[in-house]
Length: 94
Length: 199
Image (cartoon, rainbow over all chains, first blue to last red; front, side, top):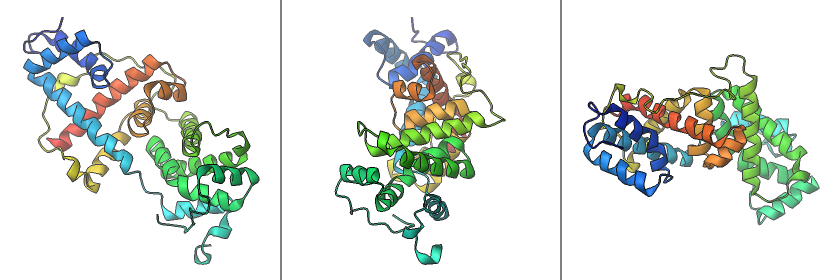
C-alpha cells in the first residue's frame, strides 16, 4: 500500500502516509499500518521531514502548558472588584 | 505569585476550600479567584485572541462559579470545573462574534495532503528544551493565534489544555471524527506557520 520510493513518483502514497501521521503520533494506528508507515519514513526524505517537524511542533507547543499567558495585575484587580472582593485589594490599588 | 496578596494556605485542602465556598465565605472566594484566575485567563486569551474578551470570560467564569457552587459535586477537581466553565464561556463569545472565519459547527473538509508538500523544509533552527525562552514562546503563541478559529479551539483544548480528543469533541459539541479532522489539520497548519521561523 505505501511505497518505499520517492514521493515524486508516488505522491498518493505520501499523501496516505500523511493522512495517518496524526494517528501514528497519537499511538492510534494499527501495528500493520505502523509497520508500513515506518518502512516508508525510513526511505522517504520528505515524509520524514514532515514527521520530524510535526513532532517538533507538538513537542514545543506542549511545553507552553508550563508557560501560561500572564494575568495582568490590572485585570486581577478588576476581577476582585467585580466579585465584590475589594476588601482583599490593597488600599493603594482601590 | 504576583498581584494581590492572598494567603492561599488558610484552607488546608481543596475540600475545606469548597466547603467554605458553599458557606459563602468571601475569604474562600478570594482564595479561589487568586489561585485559579491565571489558568482561566490563559485559556480565555488563547482561545479568544482578545484581551477584552478574555477579561469578560474571566469575570463571567468566577461570577458563574460563585453562583453555582452549590451544584459543584466535587466529582472533578475545582480547577477542572472552573476550566470547563471558562472554556464554555469562551466558546459562547466565539459564537457571538459577528465576523467569524468559519462557523464553529460547520464541518471542515480536509484532504489528506492539505498542501503539505508545497514546501518541504527541515528545521535547522528549532530550539531544544533548554532554549524554550520567551522569544520562542512568543513565536509559538503568535503561530497558534494565526490558526483559523475553528482549528485553534480544538488545538488549544487538545494540545495545550490537555483534554482528550473525546473530551474536546464533547466540549465543542462535535463528533469525535470531526475533532480528529480539525486536530489533524491544525497540527499540519501550525507546522507550516512555524517553518519559516525555524529554517
